[in-house]
Image (cartoon, rainbow, N blue to C red; front, side, top):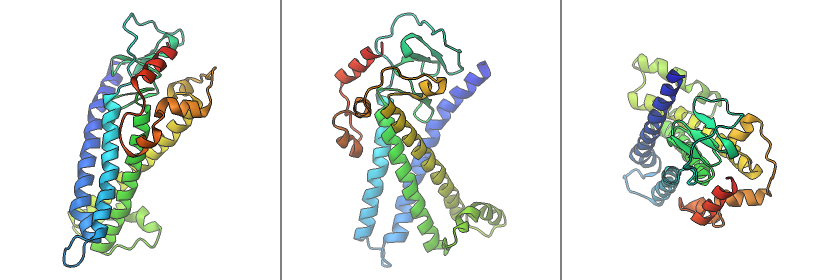
Length: 277
């Protein structure tokens, strides 16, 4: 048990560092290699396409980082649980959390009582619950979009700079193993090999975040959390899906689609906390 908890704490520290490092590398590749090589003219002048793609990439990555910060800034910790912790009879004393009475959870990594805990996100280093679910979903949306956009530009960069043709669908599937072999033989430059690795990193992160996004939206619409689904709990008092989405995204949800701002007021958070107590 202690060894498993140590592994989780180590992952809780490494995952945010990995995300920030990948973000920095992605930013550098886009503005120093991809966009200039693909969209600038032969005389190295900045044209409208360069500005458009640069602005679009900045919009995506700033929204991803903004919602990432908001997920951490507005934790899912309950503000009303200051008393002794009482485990639920169904508590199985999991490695990462205790199940408490009234549907609450005590996260051993966050060391806090979590309101409507869905899961613990290692990339943000905190739990995802009712208070920060909206930011987590938008973080997944923009991270997935950013990664897939970078994937397209990366493929275009390899085509322009290294004359790699992707007309055959099997080219992408065999690109990584062939690049590894040619790199160790000295036939592939280091930059090309690194970009190929990043293509698969972007693909993996993009598909994972897209899957998380779809899963969380479905759970929110049903008024259910991943913890409840995993334990097989059925929500007894289900509200309409519009009401469930409004509880998470707020009334100004359209603004939240384009800007990482708070769309759920404190009074609504307090009401949700009181509702689940």
